[in-house]
Length: 77
Image 1 (cartoon, helix red, strand yellow):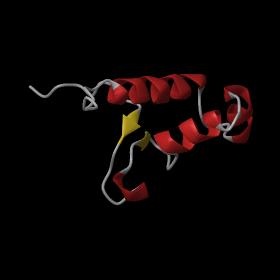
Image 2 (cartoon, one colour):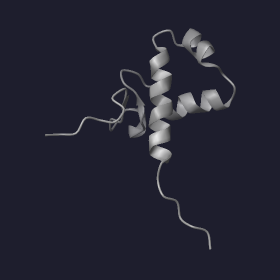
Image 3 (cartoon, one colour):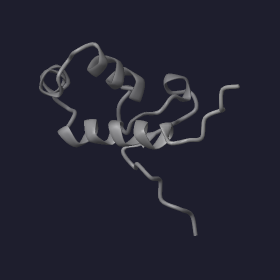
């Protein structure tokens, strides 16, 4: 039995945006959303700019990023 993806709204497909993680059914990458939020855009502004997105899409991007940053780093010497 295959395991369900941890974040089903986020997919990576070879040949689509270079295989980078993106929102399902779009060419909008996790990096695009995180970059926009880091630049000061609000979720409400992004929802106006991209009306086909849903508020839950932004939560999925943030969960995906948090899950993928949860790894052991290399200790500094």
